[in-house]
Image (cartoon, rainbow over all chains, first blue to last red; front, side):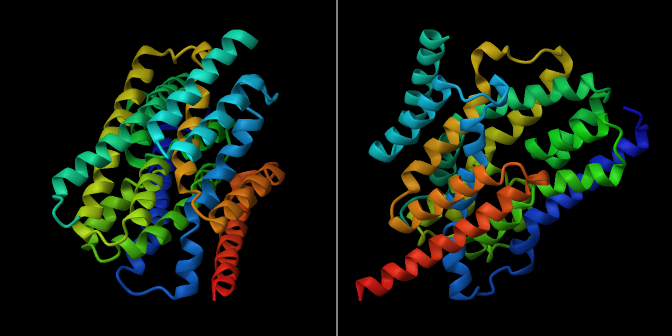
Length: 109
Length: 236
């Protein structure tokens, strides 16, 4: 890396301020003003709209295997999802997924 | 419900946040290791983790710094990776918007995928809790995560070795998020949104700067909203 000390700090502070502003955007500017119903209807789906797209490529093409689909990881993901849908218990689904992951890595190698 | 205290909600959030240390500890340590190996000194590595507190954006920016990209490109790329936080901010606003400005600023600083996803699930399940309890829960979720994010970065930078790949901790992130999303798939609209998100997330994964994620998320929100409207019309 050729960046000098002050350049690195400029990048850190710039990223810190910019990141804060993206997080603060609506919370800071809208505050307790009411959002229109159609906006609220869209916002209700934010978690299930963002997080699946974030993790789907990681499940199918894990960087740890060089992007090759890995049966152990895929099975672990499906188990976590299935147990989560069935029991609605976060801890239990994490533990089930981890058990299948390690079992799968051990058996399938 | 109003019988619960802010303190009990804080500790509930704490318990719900704690399992995510499986993700935070290896990821933070890895940033410490990679940052140090790239030539950052201890203050700079810690500056990233304490001031920015956003793992994926930190890694993206660091990568560009090591490739000697111009500083503003490095910053812009990190910000693009974090653009989903605007959607998180909007989605928390109906619940936390009435808080004093300094508390909203504190929530913003501590808004990460894990604290957001836990809080959003809580507020959706129990929308009528008073503001103080909603805030207490949010701060509870981040209470185990933020300090250990700093600490694991420090340990990674000092010791210089990450957790070995045999432990497959790369997969802690997908597993913990899947466990968090699954209970939220309560209605057809939620499932349609999640299905759209997965499909477009995969199809658009080739796009740079996480743009595919943004498009997939916006499309999935629209699908969720439309299915909800359709179901309301059917119910009448």
